[in-house]
Length: 488
Ligand code: LFR
Picture (cartoon, rainbow, N blue to C red):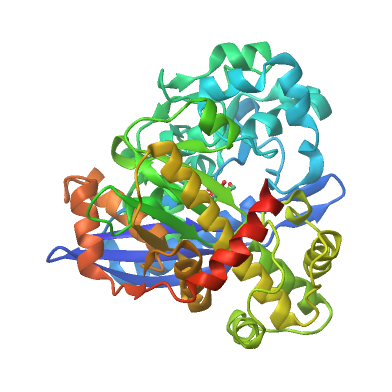
């Protein structure tokens, strides 16, 4: 059968058709569009209307190609961000981008009312200043009148599902990213939210991934030349979809979902909520098929994306492969940074931020583009190693393999560095894990496949994976000792 996935990342969105035949999945990208956040005086926003317009264009192209052969469609995006609807479902404001600065200091304010420990024990979610919880608190502080007019809170994929179907519904995997949902009770953490003065009545009912949300509206069908087509909630958090497509056969592995972010962790059956995960700031995000992802957000290729954008602004337009080629030529393991240092969250000039960090920590300052990108990639690999050690410690077992999935696996240098730094074999691929996971959950919803185990068998059969064995482990060990001091 044939399904359509919309997978929206921080840089671009894709419409991908997946065909499942003979227990193999083939992918066809039929449309790709940029996702460029827009800054206006009040802050940084996602251009959700444009994005929805582009998704309709993707649907139009899919319908033109396959007519009524599409069984369903499903949307996944990044987590934590949301839209608010008011009277008669009007969109009350353009949704904010999680990198907008307005949540600065809000998390610390919240701790004065509900302690950090309590928030973690209710939600199991890591503390990131941009979690929906703190974004909603920022709304309450900064725009109380508008918030009081809100009647519905929808996460970004749920908002698009609403635009497609007219139906307002939440989805479990993305609901957990808010830090407002209690995975143990399977409900919004209503008491905690009430203590923080946040409205609970806005929050939608939460469906499990693989639920049919509804049919596309007749008007959307006419605009796109489509017949009736059901909209499914997949693992609507992109990381949930990506991890659903990790081609692992057994439970003992660490995955890295590599894109703008690197999501580094392992799959568990129950959230691990204890003092250790709290103090290490690990998270337990909801997954597909009753799983949880015990993981940590690592800043990821954002470092390189932002360097590239800074250089492009100065008229030096370089592709990722050109930048990686320069990094390959640079001297190995000179200076390293903690990719998750707050100064890298949204600096105006990323190369300057990396240089300043190196200077302030008494290391050689990378000067050329190649040196800066190499420093970023090596630092990511070392942070993966750091997360691996902590994970093994938390779980009390070894994770002998590292699966890397997502667009970032096209960067072979990063895969090689990861093998070296972790001392583990790296299995890289699929590049389009997120779309594959989205499509396979649609196939589950339609009854074509049974479960996650079968989905992963299909992934193993359908994609060419590349393995990397650890090299230069001595040099990585030595640098890791320096790195650890920077992180702790
Ligand atoms: C990755 C991701 C991460 C989430 C971050 C912000 O695309 O969804 O999982 O922490 O974006 O939403």
